[in-house]
Length: 112
Image (cartoon, rainbow, N blue to C red; front, side, top):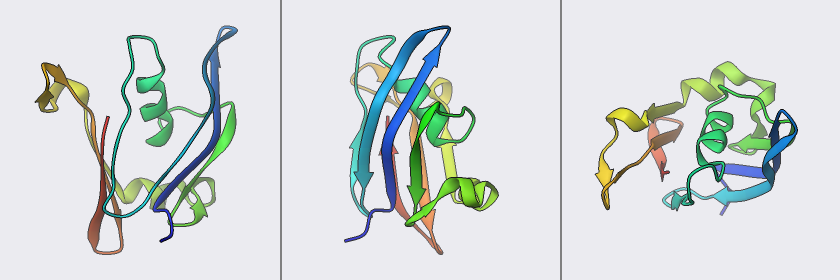
């Protein structure tokens, strides 16, 4: 099955401090992906890059088999996010919820 979301080699640094170092994963339709980690592990940075609110230093994000850089507007139109401050609480912690849709149906939910 083709990946709905494919992430390869994401890196990001802030003032010489490398936050992300070659992150990569695939999400297929119907799959739930959780990104867990301690404070300052790069979870929010990853979300900000996935939602195109922050640019990665290196790496590629593909949605529906196409690079998101080719048509960022179309990618953002298929993306929905519930910010952490209003997201549901799971195991005592709030989570990000990202909905990715492809076509007319929501094909994937990421709980971050």
